[in-house]
Each structure stands twice: as structure tokens, then as C-alpha cells.
Image (cartoon, rainbow over all chains, first blue to last red; front, side):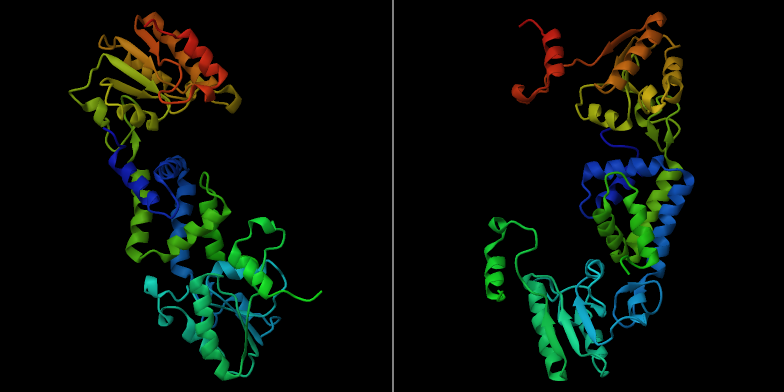
Length: 199
Length: 199
């Protein structure tokens, strides 16, 4: 016997499959599940099922939502002339946290990456182009990740959008506020130099 | 909108309640759950339910098991004259991994800790004493954790057992094999000195 009882082993195995959960953490989580009260455990599994059944993509911006249209897209107070394009729903939260952007979003759900077999048609680019048909949209801000894939996706989309007469911009590259210059990598510093502003 | 859609927020909240899962990890886990296939998600929740329904305590040693009596207790090849007392089912696995101990176990499911309101009657001490009624058991090895609580539990149990004429021993304290002496704490070194053996 160098393992637990079968159902416990299976439970540990399930947790070990989750991202960044190692064998020890999986054990700890499994034991925690066993120590939960009946109600807690029921809430846990039911929340998983409910979330999977009710969460879908907003028909306009592709962000995750419980309803057909997400709260941002259906809000009357948002500026409908500017769309910020991000890779992931978590990026929307990050930008919302700044309380500085009042436009709409578009969530691509990934970035173009031929190495990982993710092509333009695998992410929500088509849905973005369709939104630009109306005259409302004046500017698209590309806020994809500052990575090779994010950059390539950004370039690809801007080439599609420009002919439609919509302004396309992208987030500035530079040194992060509050960071130590000494620790900034060369690429960031080069971009920061290129993007320098007159004082 | 500085949060996700309600069902997703609830899902993240559920994961954030798990031990050593922070807010960021909870988000990552929740997104992973949403990205699972229908079958994977079903297996995940069903494994949780099945584990909770089928895992119980062995009627003899209190270790976790799917059946009435665990595999160790029902094995014919184990030495029934010695019982190793541990705090947690994970400790059984740790000792089994040595392939050196062939006796039986007893899992206390905790240690006496007045500070946390855990009294002798809250852990499986009664069940252990009942096992000593038969003449089979010759020795009880205390393998509780080398902590104040583990130590106290060990002392408490040994006082109950000794009058029954059963030998009680406990794991040796000392420097861990392969460790650097420089990094051993004072208490461990004191115990290692006390327990020194002639060469």
C-alpha cells in the first residue's frame, strides 16, 4: 500500500490535473474536499456546474457573461466610439481596474500563434470586424499582450481595420511605473527609448 | 464592472476558499474549469461526489478507506503485534514508502491541542485503546508529528497504554539524513545529542 484508497487516489488525480497544482497540493486539496461539510461540498460542485452551464460569450464583444449581452456592451454610459481589443477576459478586468477607460471591449480569446496552431480564424477577429461596420466606432485600441504572439495579432488586425477608415492605436511600450530601471530588460528599454516624450 | 460575470465570480470564490489557493490561482483554476470539455468537467465533479460518498474510516484503524476494513488491516501478511500511531492518513503513506514497517497503523485524525479546542475525545484515541484489548498487540510505536501537539498527544496516549502492559516507543529525534548540520535548529541538535549512539 503506497497509495490511498482508490476513490481518494482518483480525487487527488483530478486535482493534480489542474494548472499549477502539484502532487502535494492536489493531496491537500483532496483532503480539504473530504473535510468539507455536506453543504459546502454541494455548493462547490453545483457552482462548477452552474458556471459551466450559464457562462457564454457576449454576442457583441465575446467577453464572458451570464446573459446574451455583457454589462459593458449593454451599458448606456459607455463611449461606443472606441473599442479596446484584449486577448483574455482577465485583461478586461485589469483595464477596468484603472477606472480610466470608458469605451467598449473586444475579447479575442487568444492570440495568433502558428507554432501552437492558433490561426486568425480560431480567435474572435471576425466578430471584431463585424462590429466596425456601423459608423459609431472611431478608434480601436490594441491591448494584446506585449509578446511575439500579441504583437503579431495586433499587426494582423490593424491591417484588416485600417482600410475601413477606423483609427488603430496600441498601448505604449515602456518601463513600468515604480520599477527599477536596472532590472528592465533590453527590449523594454529599447522600446522606452523609441517612445520617449519631450518634457 | 471591476469583476467578472456573477457565475464566474462565484466559481472563483469557491476556488479561493480552498487551502493555499490565492485570488490569482483561483481565477486560473476557474478559467481552466470553463475550458474543460463536457466529459472532463463531469468526471471532475462526479469524482468529488463519489469520493465524498464512498470514503469512510476503517472500523479498526480509522484510516480512510472505500471498504469497511482498510487493506492494511485486512491483509494476512502484516504483523499484527505492532501498531504505529500517526496523526494523519498522509503519514501512513510516508511510512509505507519506506517499505520497512510491516505492522498495522492507527490514524488519530489530529493531535491534542487545547489551544485549538481539540481534546482527547475529538481524535481517535478511544478506538486505539479498544484495539489493545486483545493479546495480539505487543508494541505501540508513537509516530505523531515532532511538534508540541504531537509530543503531548504521544505522552497522553503512552500514559493510557502503559498500564495495559503494552510496550510503547516513539520515533527517534535527530538530524535528518542528508541534511546540512549547519542548518539544523537547536532543538533538533539537542535531541540528536541526547539520543547519540555508541559507534
